[in-house]
Length: 491
Image (cartoon, rainbow, N blue to C red; front, side, top):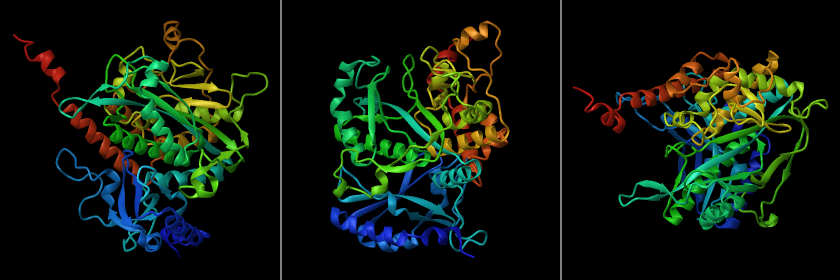
């Protein structure tokens, strides 16, 4: 019986794709290839090879230690998290359709890869590696589409900050002033965002709008929503683009959620909808269609179909019955989902610094920014308890798990809250609060069998181990605040 790895490599049409990539490599003059995957925390890792070896690596893949999926990180005791040095090596297989020339160095091409267990493992040799969040998302979405007859489309709002370096080479102050929607401050970053736009469009991001947000140096640049996996790939690509542009301008691209108190943090709202049908369509993104700098699949966006989140005729603000069931699943499991959307210690600075529209209550409403979720427009549901450090692949799988539960059990999200949530609470409404620390969020995740289904196989174990160690490191650290508050407290 063929292994998962063998089925992947021998998939119908893949040989033709491999040949098409060779032709594209030669046409573009690409000399070197990055083979990328995404770790549990959203970090991009991989290997590089000379382009001469493309055909061999496309068939056999590359090997790398299992622990790379958890950043080869050690815990407080000095032990490697997830996998020790005795563990086998995974196999990464590049996906031909994801080939893309890097616009900032046209000698280099990039692929995303799917990860598998080693071919010689005693148990499940060549099986899908469940610490590969990207591979999990593809498989879970396929299962969801088959079971529920609907597919998930997501558009993300990736806020981030452009910072200056201080005299010691450390990121410090924002490049612009904290004036929300201020065109002059947007203009001050024009050379930066125009270069980001240039690279993004070349790499298949259909950019649609942007603005200056209300923190120092904070921009949000958006692209068109799409299939959940492709959107996650574009978000990780966008982060790479921002890092490169920052190097070119001698500034720092900051995706840390809350580098400054007293101003807004960086969120990454996920606008989602479930669809029946639709088909992929090519979007040029300003490129010459006959001379694309990557495979055509990078420029595909799913269009059309039936949006099951669209409202019924009798209430333009209320999603339809099918959409409400899926929303009910997300509302019901929001506390556990917060561990994925707000996955760092720093994430909770965003929730504690009140007055900047960060959600702290597990409720929903129509265009109500005081709730954890809102209907942001007809047919679109905005998941708000998620920030700029999110791993979009884990967010995708856990949202699918929650929506699947909502549909299966016809979960009722309750009536949408139209009042400011704080006024509603004063009036007597009982509302669950979101977790207010990483430790609390991890406890909710541990208690949610449903959300943990979005972290299949070894994924939950690795996420739990990594994040509990992160929280323990924080709790065992003496901070400047500790010293300022307690050093001279007594006698």
